[in-house]
Length: 96
Image (cartoon, rainbow, N blue to C red; front, side, top):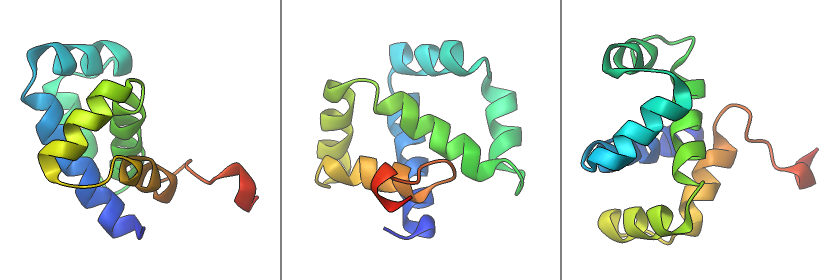
């Protein structure tokens, strides 16, 4: 997956998470960010990739979340991990 496609999928993941009060609260608890900090990080070219990677890291913590998200956006669940690998810090151990 290209980094651009991964970023697009991660943005869709943000919409998915934002649609569930418990998920968004968990994301903010996990990252220490609030709405304003998330918006600022997404608007900053220096931090957008890492922020999107963090969103996917959060989503990948729970298989049920991944499955629900994948169903909502009509993708294979493994595409979420492929997207994460394509973002900063996601180099697969087998490619080192």
